[in-house]
Image 1 (tube, one colour):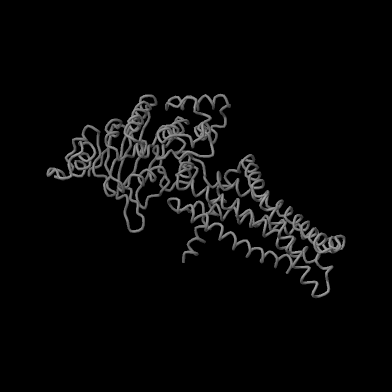
Image 2: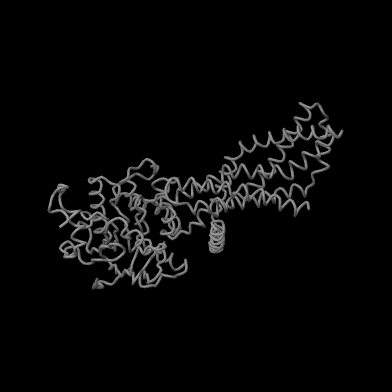
Length: 245
Length: 265
């Protein structure tokens, strides 16, 4: 019942947001500021996670294929799992953890401190002022971060294959290059874009729905990150079905 | 109680407004007219419906029944464009100032100008901000961060922001709440100064009867969602209404002993 109520509120939120965007386009300066902030703040943690996802993909791929006698397939495995699935999801997860929680908590604090009411009274639509720059900023930056995560994952896998496992780096790269096409990169960017939309809208929505007091802020942030995480992995599966059948 | 229709034309009208939250009726058929150029205070105990009344008045909450008229236009079900046009003529001081923590004092005060008066050149914008900060007793505070301000200073900055677009109406939500008596007195003097300087309509929501008597021309009292008294301040303080008398006695009388047999009579 509560899920249906939240879904209904979210639908209203989307309609109101669509109307606000149609009435007045958001300021380019505010969008770029958000994109810069999201990108710079999320970059270090994203790089660290991408490195270790790459190292572990290479290790597990090498172990699995060694049993089948196909060590040369590590490049193919990392390219398929890393590029198509892991990199877009970890980039989204890191942005959700850093930028998404920040969006939810900032807006929730503004809600309980009457700053959103103040915007309304000053004849400024809060959805236009608070959500639009965050949404467009994240949409601008997440596809780029996804591509970056892909290359860092591949690089880390290559390093493990060459330096730790003592296998041929050239074979790894040739296998990876043969597996990853331009379409794969484009699909990953589309995933990044879709995840960005989900992260921004869901996080802002829960911020706006925050109840009173510090407890309300905590609950809103928690609900945002849990919902975004579930939504991203579900959407990732659906998009993979559409792209790769 | 009887409907009060002041001689001065009203800028804001609530006509038979009812607002419920679930089973609880917070405003019960309230009719109120706020006359132009006068200061009207609505007082009442906590939970009487004062804050809800203010939110209904500016369209932050929609009434379940009744009509809200701003500047002669029915805005009860008005689309956003119409409501926003009316709100540009209104400034509001929130309880805690509702200032944006990520902006400086100057940026907060300039916020309405940046949103609605982009025609103003930088120098004119800055001049207006400096002027309003001076009016509220905070000259040169433009570059200060919000986090460095005291409670009283936050209210002053909030007031500077509320008047920067030169509105026709300023709403005050509990201007004295959370302040010590000395700072509270200073805020009352500031409201009086603004009243003299601007000559516009003020609507004050408060539970502080001392400050109310000092600044208001008209006083209304809300009790359990109903308007139980409304009239000129001088008449209000002499009201024979037992609820008003009880509220005034608690707020105006010097403290009495808990064992005083006269208390509560």
